[in-house]
Length: 219
Image (cartoon, rainbow, N blue to C red; front, side, top):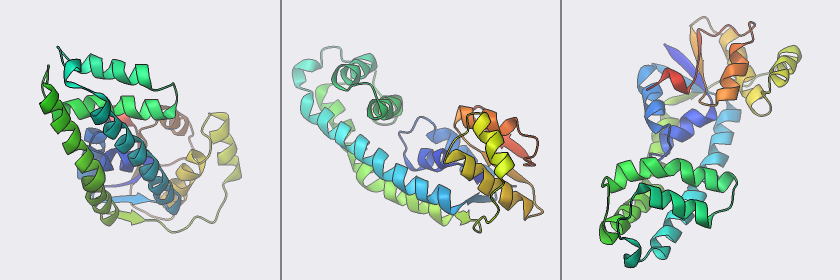
């Protein structure tokens, strides 16, 4: 079976502390061939750079800010409160908050860590964010196939997508997948972990994907 994936699937695979990492790993194992377009690959590059910078800076600051006296019954909710207290609402805080549970599960793995064990966990996480993410990115890229450039604009389909709140670059991403699907005779699944994107694509009958799949299709 073959699939065409949205940017968030690749990002979730690359970052082990992404909340959808396990789901993306399931996608990676499920398909014989995984495709993406030049647009998806380019967006992945930009998102990777931004997300990595946000997370590296946060975990560096976390290690510097916390003191031994903060670790009297320090639990996961205290870490979450630290973020809510120190970071204003916005995309950066959302990125940080979304990483916390996986960080705790992957690196802390204690209900009530000590100061030393917690700082060690942060340092291991930082090392992975500085090194492991690049090897995972290379692994993803080496096992993902690039589609040919799309020429047709599919103006009517684009209008339908926009009316269903699927906006750039998501509209062009699924049109890349649609165009690729039309030019090949093998079944192709389209996968996105964005809920609104998934709902919009699922409602358009002209898309003849084998299946449209979202994050709820994976454990």
